[in-house]
Amino acid sequence: MDRDQMRILAGRIGLSIPEEDLEAVAAHFSTFLQRLAAVAPLVEDEEPAFFPKGEGIPR
Amino acid sequence: MNDLCWRSLTEVAELIRNRKVSPVEVVQTALERIERLDSRLNSFLTVLADEALGAARQAEEALSKRESLGLLHGVPVAVKDLIHVRGARTTCGSKIMADFIAQEDATVVERLRSNGAIILGKTNLHEFAYGVTNVNPHYGPARNPWDPDRISGGSSGGSAVAVAAGLCYGALGTDTGGSIRIPAALCGIVGLKPTYGRVSRYGVIPLAWSLDHVGPITRTVQDAALLLQVLSGHDPRDPTSSREPVPDYLGALDGNIRGVRVGIIRTMMEDANSEVRTLVQNAVEVLAREGAEVEEVEIPHLQEMRTAAAAIAMPEASAYHLRWLSQRPLDYGEDVRQRLFVGALLPAHVYLTGLRARRRLNREFHSLFSRVDVLVAPTVSVSACPIGATAVRVGGEERDLRTAYLWFNQVFNMAGLPSVSVPCGFIGHLPVGMQIIGRWFAEGEILQVAHGYAQRMNWTNLRPAVS
Image (cartoon, rainbow over the protein chains, first blue to last red):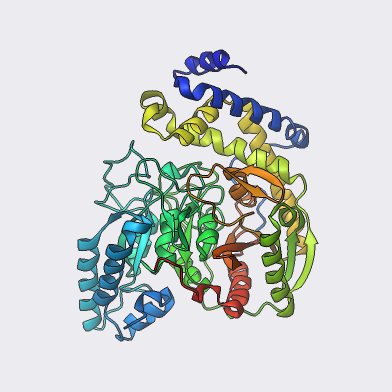
């Protein structure tokens, strides 16, 4: 995602990213989504656990 | 009393209880040390000197009538400045909340006070607890007492510095991805992140609701057990607070670790720099000599689980900050602001992927804890870096600071497991820590292993350069 796309995306939810942040935010955003692609196949059969407590915690 | 400031919290509580020292003397000693040393360390954002002295006089009066105010009668402690103390500022280390005055105590502060503790002040932190260095653009960095040109670690850096430098006997921190354990490790003291739900979060400004934990930072494992005893228990004002019974943490602490099954997390050992790895290996050998049964274990898909932890943390943090991010973006420091923007823009499926991974991770840990009783890993991959550094070398590889310090911590927040960091030695003049992780609500077990190790090594008897 480039700087302009980032600016448009932010504008849609009422945010205005300062000019000096655009590059860093765009780079972090893109890198993170790339990393997340490796997580998705691991959780295909899972339901979300909204909190650590009470879900999967043995008593 | 010459070494009063270096007595442990447990010892000073006993000295006060037995009327060997007065609460007023204890509080005055702490205030004098803050006055003398904290201009160099910058650990406190607010010192509640008058209130603390007033409370000390009341504690003394109660003693004179042979009344006990509780386990912490007359003991001065500090509180991270995102935890509400009635009538005091809660700045969160930010410009945005610089003038916010809390109208009530957080539950943890209520519990401290109802057990006789005296709140000495509010400690420095990474802005809104969203970072690991405690280099704060609004209030200046908390400085490591072992080398004031280096970071304290964060985000509960001020609390760790104050305890390590003998400015107070214990402090509260919060931990969303390592923020109690990291500064405890880098400052050479003990930091305990309890099980999620064990300690109330009511009255604590959130970073990420489903990852935030409140816990003690102390100089000894016994002190951590004592504070945990006071802090633990159900709180109807925190919807995630647990009703699990609170055991006698302190009474059960004898350091006997014979037969305890210890799993060393292989990948985390390999990911630490060689000096840290050697120190943790040495510590594990001590555990083995004391009768622990040691084996290597692995957390499957660890790298992906770290990403998943961030997929939960970033949107939760940004959701809390969205209004300010929209109205006052330039009032945040650059690093926090940029992270908040990224979290705000991530699509919903990212967050849900993180939550789905949490269920899988919980199952992996459940399986691991059928084989071992506790897990052991380094707390940090390197010792404290110079203030202003943006990257560190781990092995031959350059890593950004967040990765280097968060690396071994986030997954335990994601699963809500208890973890305690204890000092395990020094690299040059700088301390590092080892963390011991347990089953859900098994704080007693991890404290037992930590105590078994710590009482044989006595790393916390060493004094930092600025003290």
